[in-house]
Length: 400
Ligand code: ADP
Image 1 (cartoon, rainbow, N blue to C red):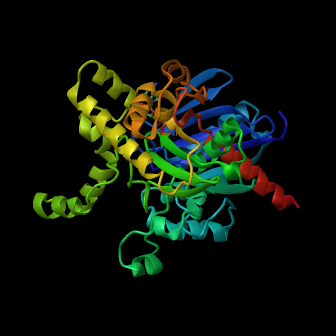
Image 2: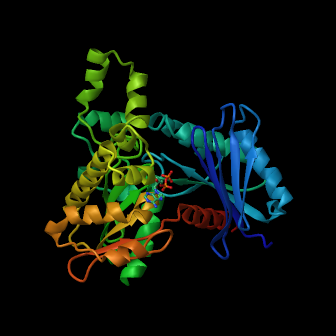
Image 3: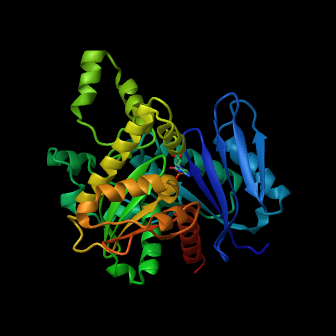
């Protein structure tokens, strides 16, 4: 194995997604997930060479333990020596990070300072960085921020209509997330549209467990649906997206919720799960809706309606629209949701090619629009590749 591998890590509070990307071929040669960390039955799933393996971890194992187990596995597969850099997905970079950064003690402390804007996300990223620094002490580590791509959004789009001092003094504004995915998809869309990126105008819907839409003008993010945190915007798997902020107060004052319970309700018990009272998993919701489950159908209807409204509103910051693009687990696989959303946007002239819509699933990119109206494209995202490329780029600058 040549020395060209980047180990990409994405740490959540109780999970850790990872991939080993060969920077020469740009292929993932190993990937997987450690989940239920800190619980009585944490486990590690690894995909390598076409084989899938599940390893039970000791009760209470956290990120450090999972990474240590992974390192042993990489040694067993004789891959450890070929790793030349570690790339970390970091959720919030605030206004400080407009691009990826080589992690030094100073950078880590700056990521820590941003944590107050993302208390549910950044602390887990920091734990992951520290664990990786212990496990791979001699390797350069790079942070790639979910917010960075959105730093081109203009002030009139990122400011909330709150007292200006809350922005100036406390940094309360819309930051946006999924930037790595929106960036990657924009580059791919430009290729498929046969246009230079800096002349590409798209609306990109990243629909996974978390979901966001971004308006991209001349290759740059000019508006996005997530806000100070990833809670704002679309209906998501378990997050509510946009709601009247007074609901918070109502739950606390009239229904006796604590602030922690409200945060938990908005982040973990709402969205597709909350409406359907069934699941946050879009596949299950679609199956249940097919079988006549009214809650599942309602969840899908609300999901599509909110998404279509956002896409319609993002024609405002774009001078022209080259295409609407779908990505993320739902965007890449759900022909049903794509067809419903394009139907809701018929005022813009969208039509759909139903066979092309069925064909563009399970990792296949393609145009799904009919012969008239604006274009609609499905593009599988690859955040790990962007992180690996940035890790290589910044590591190379270190060597000069
Ligand atoms: P994450 O945000 O955790 O990375 P993904 O991008 O993997 O999530 O997306 C997960 C979502 O994609 C889940 O709701 C899952 O049900 C949905 N999904 C995956 N495959 C399909 C499919 N064939 N049809 C509909 N939804 C799907």
